[in-house]
Amino acid sequence: MTEDQKVFRRYVLRSFEDHHRDMTQALIWCQYHFNRQLKVDRDAIQKLSSRERNAVIREILLANC
Image 1 (cartoon, rainbow, N blue to C red):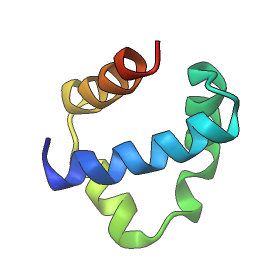
Image 2 (cartoon, rainbow, N blue to C red; image 1 turned 90 degrees about the vertical axis):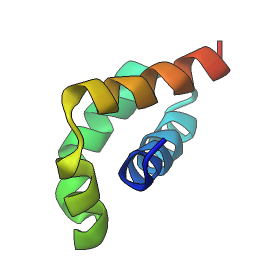
Image 3 (cartoon, rainbow, N blue to C red; image 1 turned 30 degrees about the horizontal axis):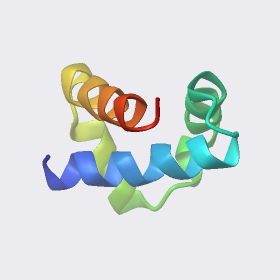
Image 4 (tube, rainbow, N blue to C red; image 1 turned 45 degrees about the vertical axis):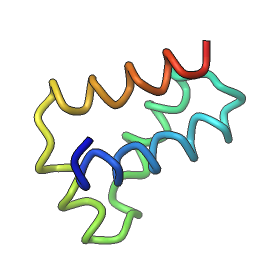
């Protein structure tokens, strides 16, 4: 996992836990609150391809099912 993916993973995991392990709600929250993240984190996340973001989400879901 790249450093950028680790940043995205931390961001999604925080939201995932806050939303009682509901990935749909977690991702919606992430989308609406993206601009509140630190610029360095936003930049890292924006560098990721959809395939890289999906790999992170897949890893979270497989580890928590």
